[in-house]
Figure (cartoon, helix red, strand yellow):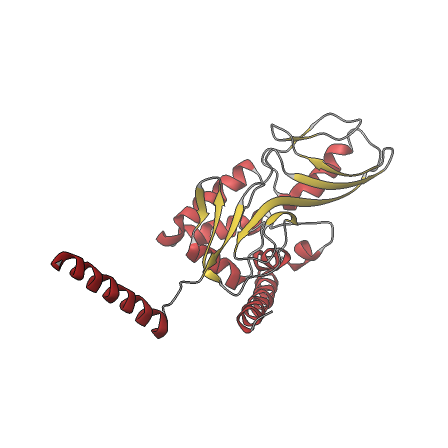
Length: 258
């Protein structure tokens, strides 16, 4: 591993560490630690997202974020293709990773399909517990929400990964092999199909503030594209290009005169 790569990886680890501290501090300040830290919950609560949307609406530069948050609050977090790890103990036992179907709905053995429209990831466990209690006596439910994303660009192991929704964006990038020596966070984007849903400035802010995949509202199939540094021409390269151009000009001049 060369010096540039080691320095880049070390920088990203520091950013990830700072992000975790910032995220933890924000949760302590908001009084949301108990909800978020519990092993049976994942993601930001409805109150957290309502507060974030209200704050984003006050700033003209973040109106797009506010609109996305309001849509998320109305429609919920789940879409076809999402994966949910379910542990169910009771009259029926299930230990499986299930895929969200159209609707969106979740199919669990021996019960009617579970509608998920309007349900947030942070609400899923309580929601399923109440729903399953109609059909199963004293259900004991544990859930984890997974998001299948692609991490491409300047990372060591580009490809598709199933991430827990409460993973930090920077940790997701480190899972994909970490940044290469040419990686640049300030030139990274997140795409949904052909549409850039998080531009460079928002991705950079997300990395600096410790945003999770859940907080960013990412969906299955979204692409984290890690950018590449601008290449700077050193003196030797500039002299080489200048010399080649001068040589070409002299050659053309020779042929024109002859």
